[in-house]
Length: 134
Image (cartoon, rainbow, N blue to C red; front, side, top):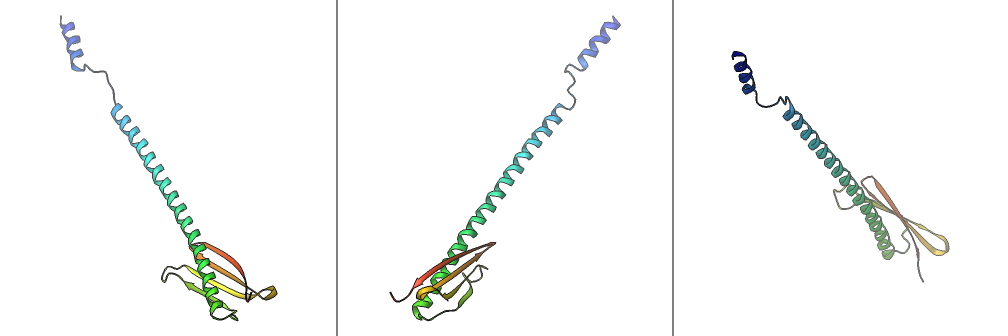
């Protein structure tokens, strides 16, 4: 009878099967998956921001080159003999973005305008040929 009591007492003491560390392993797994997702999202957003900044600078360089072209055309409108370099002109002031233009004589009485816009790491160049006097 003593032997039966001892066996019964041993069964009551630990009714659950041993699951040592299962909760810890599950928590580590969840943290790993969550960390991986957060890093992937952050990396994706950084890439999108860089692409957006490059697109903006590419477009701004084009607009600045057009501003240089219009500045050169305004100089020609004021003085048909104007042949010189314009700029670099910072536009808008304090932006560290610049435009410049160079006017030179072309063939058959034309004027060749080379306008350049610089924004960020991009430079865009436009050429225009203007025929004066008809």
